[in-house]
Image (cartoon, rainbow, N blue to C red; front, side):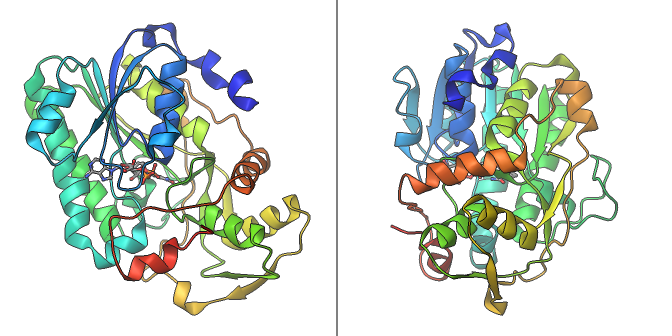
Length: 344
Ligand SMILES: NC(=O)c1ccc[n+]([C@@H]2O[C@H](COP(=O)([O-])OP(=O)(O)OC[C@H]3O[C@@H](n4cnc5c(N)ncnc54)[C@H](O)[C@@H]3O)[C@@H](O)[C@H]2O)c1
């Protein structure tokens, strides 16, 4: 198993015994952060409302303290951050199409919730560092490639605006209160323990259900896909590396892949032919065309480089998905369910 050979040897000793609160720690990226920290000997607390996250994603480690609650709940968050050394903040509503129909909810959780968490950290006087997990989506489509942290922020979706609002507030509070924060901007991540119908689980779901023809939207969109173990490691390094303080750091593989090429590659791994039908209903309004990461800052400040090539990561992901039914949980009713049918 990869998990046994894995990447944890690269994680520094100082994580051992460190008290770390992971918000959204039962989610897709959050559970990977939680599991890597546990293996490294950190004392992990997870704050999650389980709206998309799953307890079974973290239940293999029985030394995790789990707090079920909403990041917008002042008392709950104040209690959760008490006596922590570091807070890694991942809890969010992350699925872009949901944000077209629930803009207020996205702002409540992603913007106001983040402000609540960082503010409770400042008030606590014990939390020595706050890691804000942002998103490459705040940049909008690439004006130049690869995209570094100086790229203009021109968000296209309400999701991206809500994430950028949080980043700006966190950065301002860093300046106003001299409070140590790091903003990490992952590009698209993929891997096991999926929670949302992102493009890779969506293509996988269609391929694994045996459909002859894939039904997809914008095949020309280009994304930079990073295996979740690598993304999580960057986030963890951001929670201890001194050179990261006060910085915004992009995290991505640096390789741009179109959705068309991604589908062809995934079909090839499964020894299938990719017949693709374009469904205009699946086009996202005001979609981002291209996102490709310049990870120089991550290399210099976190000593981070991605280690898992796309083909290898896809094989692991497909194996994981093949072994179990995909079931998405959503706090929303109605339209987004179309995207959340999964196979279960
Ligand atoms: N997956 C990606 O490709 C990607 C890329 C860039 C940034 N991000 C960011 O990474 C973070 C994690 O995303 P993910 O893909 O793992 O999604 P996810 O849905 O798996 O994770 C979000 C977690 O937050 C929890 N949560 C949601 N609302 C909450 C609330 N009000 N209170 C407490 N917990 C709540 C969910 O239950 C879930 O466990 C998000 O901040 C997202 O914006 C993700």
